[in-house]
Length: 342
Image (cartoon, rainbow, N blue to C red; front, side, top):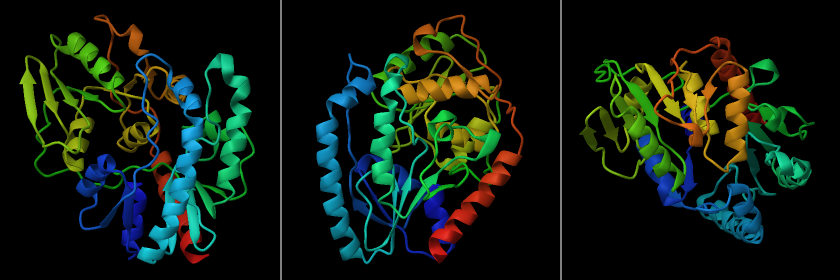
């Protein structure tokens, strides 16, 4: 959503960000000076014992209640702030009959694990029901063979109001910082996602990389914390970094390890960096994306349970062409022209 907000600012629109406080820390770092509204989304929580898809299914009644509640609240927000357009990042209840609304998603098909894949049509119908309530559905991907979402958006007939807008990244068109403090050989580990799996992955990777050369830089992904640096043997850790320093850290890496979350993948591609993708256990979407992008030869992947001392980190060099970045710029500008001029 940060790239969309920046593009709207460039076109002289007044942008208001509505999110929970955890996400606001990142937005405020990247987009200072905007108006912020406390508007948390649905938080499903994560079980220590159940796969995520089972945990979500058990909380479906709570999800429906949240959709109704956020739909009522967004009406008040629109009235109080005189909003003309509302853009929803995968939140079902933020449509409006009075103003233009946009639903942003990379997965029309919500993936289920293999044994339950026959139930995916229920998720497709659920998704279509809400997508049709919006003026547009923006898909942050490309049509054709350059796509990165695979069957999540390219395996079914899409609703008529969908538009591919290219890959979104806060690093797109950002110059390198003048003082690059990461010009030394290093591996980069980008931590993200919920606990307890974030902590489990961190501990496993520290055990593996602690005695390896070159040193490894861990980005903890905690934008609400102070920028702290800690060093222990061959491990350097940052709670978070400004975007320009994070870009330097990634692009100067010998090897990169990251979760296979969609935003992480888009940002890595925008920086022309490949990585070893480790899906969050119990998240079918991440497991599918890692397998799909590995099959394309763009990334390598390994399950968290198979990480061990013999794990080989892959080169950070990108196997795709610059065409994917250029086409993304064109698609985004076209989609915004249609949204803003319709």
